[in-house]
Length: 108
Image (tube, rainbow, N blue to C red; front, side, top):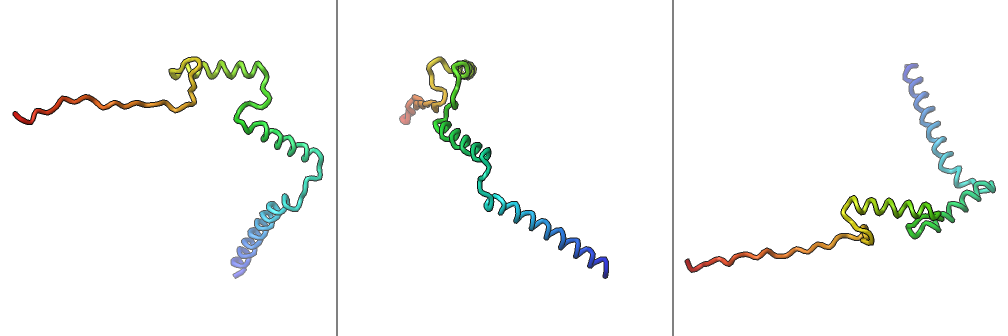
């Protein structure tokens, strides 16, 4: 009987410690406001980056970085059959023509 009691106490202790750790982990960010100026600066920079990168382009690229990007895109375009000035991001247009069939001669 004492073995069962010790297992039960061990399981209850494990469950309680797990639940308290989870509750603390969930409620800590809610209770804590940003009072540290470093944290506030970090959050401000993240918001600024999100705003700048909303267009899908590079954020504050240097001329060298833009040149490297153009070279890499041109290299990919050549590798996959594109040419300079062709938009490789556009879905290709397919034109399917009906095949010309010989008429069937039903009279014979």
